[in-house]
Amino acid sequence: MRKLFWTILSLGLCGWLTAARADTYQLTDGTSVSGDIVMFNDSGVTLRTLTDSYTNVVWPKLSQASLKQLAQNPKARSFIEPFIETPPPQLKNEKIEVHDVSRLELPPQESLFAALLSSSVGFVALLLIYAANIYAAYEIAIVRARPIGLVMGLAAVLPIVGPIIFLSLPIRTEAPADETQAPAEAQTFAVPGAAAPVAESLTASGVLAAPAAGGKAGHPEAQVFQRGQFMFNRRFFETKFSGFFSVVRRPAEKDLVLVIKTGRAQLIAQRITRIAANEAYFEVAQGSGRQEVMVPFADIQEIQLKHKDA
Image (cartoon, rainbow, N blue to C red; front, side, top):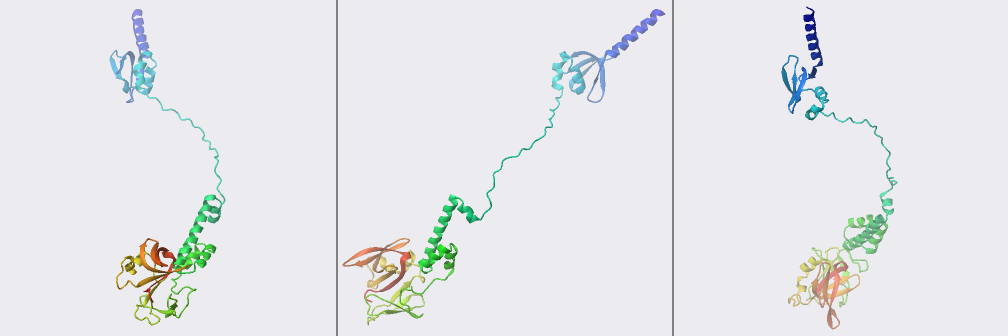
């Protein structure tokens, strides 16, 4: 009896020691498995359970804690490491310090005119604008038939505003101040070669018609074209005096001449030799010969179309 007791006690102790030595591994589905490790391979681990049976557990079914537990075995580490999840790096909670930066100082606020004068580029731009203002006043004085000196002087004193004032005024239709003024319905002009001044009356079309003087009733009336009533340009000469461009004139026009009055001289033209965009070239009698004279359109104040003996 005593031997049987010790035999049963020895077998119980061996079973208890075996159960105590077996390891328990957690699975991903929440269950666990206990047993001794028999072998490792690429697919998983083989365990011998307490009931002396064998079971294979693949690596993906083991929890991360069990994988780390098995990785402590040097023989199993090479198989388990690919399945162990690496925790993300811990971000350091560093304090961000904002440092002051150097900023450019803004220039003091001032008017646009003062700002332009404070730089060389702005000063040159103002000079160009001022020069353009004076030139615009010159052109406006010519187009509006106003005194050039008066318009340019006002533009010099009142830039931009002065030219706008004269540009808003209507075109002057009266004769210049240096010519003899006549009543509103008639004006008198001195015609070279005539015994007395010729009275010119304004027709309905805006052309001044001057009757022949000194008993020469057979000559046609002179036609006068004044600046302000007509725009002297290339189209004007090509439409009004087309017969003066040919070398051989038609019989009805061969005795007619053009009297060109400018601010400096008066020309008697026999023919228009050529014409450009801004000036015309006239053939003028010079002594016993003839000479070509260039006259800018801007200088022409008046044109008369009349008979050469009128």
